[in-house]
Image (cartoon, helix red, strand yellow):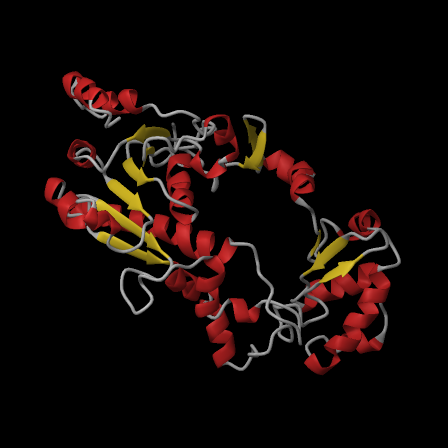
Length: 376
């Protein structure tokens, strides 16, 4: 793999959601990431649908056996970082916690991904994205006025506040380790990451620009100029005309000369103005509104579904999406001017244990012994 992280060696302990997303990000950028999983976990033909596992080879190790633990520690000696996403204490019970790993490799960065964090009264409790973003305050803010909170898939906790935060933390620690020669533990919690994503919102709230009530503020669908609207064909468009000059362009292109619209930032007028825009956008199809507004400074976009997004001319020209094994998925991002990333390899259906161990310097005799003992 080519990319800005070429030469970096990472061990990923196979888990769910955010840790694999972090590992995918690193692999997309050229890092050599090997996935360590229990025997029998391979998905076979179904692996191609596991987009988060692209770009990596798989090692199956039986960590219930001492030889399996020792083999992983030998891989740790050759790694720059290790990523795991289990409950606090699981890796320690396997004999593979930070202390054991860093004893073998003092420069190792040990990335830990959990929902609640490594400490705190909830650290050992089960949970999922919806629970973490609820505790961090983000879920409360998402939804329409007078209605219950809306569940935003698992973008915020698992991926934005989870996997991306872990990737950032691991790379920060790796950069520091190059100066100090010492590794450290990165404790990435989805509750912490979700709170961090809300930094601007806390500033707005303190300044009196964000209400604790859902759906009545500038960026939560409360404003008539920052919302989605249904069109005549049942499809939707999205407006984001906040700045006065962009708002003026929206009004001009839509032929709106109603003086009531001049009170743009008067929140008391937003419900009534939203009703007027609702009626307006129902008069034409989404395609007609795109013809009138798309590409202008009116801050407009059509609301596209998964398939439509991949076919939009802008995304096609930039190569925002690709297909691997017949599965449509996002391409690696961001872009680099000098060290461009390769197209990722599609997820592996079967382990490559022997080849990976060989490439990572494990002697042939030991590989044979591990295979005979059923460790790999």
